[in-house]
Length: 154
Image 1 (spheres, helix red, strand yellow):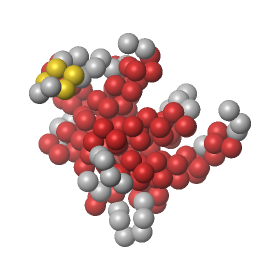
Image 2: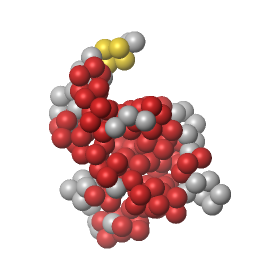
Image 3: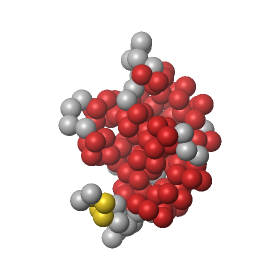
């Protein structure tokens, strides 16, 4: 499995763990332990949970929790008026939080990679407008914090 595939698997697993934490109220350590011990690398109900980049997986989860006030405030600013983050469905909220965290705090990962990866994660869960929403919201955030990277020629 390539490094980029492990990183993609880490993002998907992190979104699933963040969702679980949001719904069940579990803490970071419990969520990480559960995913590492019971989900990652196994096939459950016909779905294979690929082995992720464990460092990225842990960083996303811990970082979203540590920086949640900033992440949520900035997401609320980027979302449509009258539609705060708390009204967004839980899986979509986890996707947006993880993507926003990477944009703000993982400058080692190119903006376009982060946005593309989380649009793909959204596609794993949704068929309709949600991937487009993820793209629009993360693009708005990226333009406010890493605009220089977006305007640079590849």
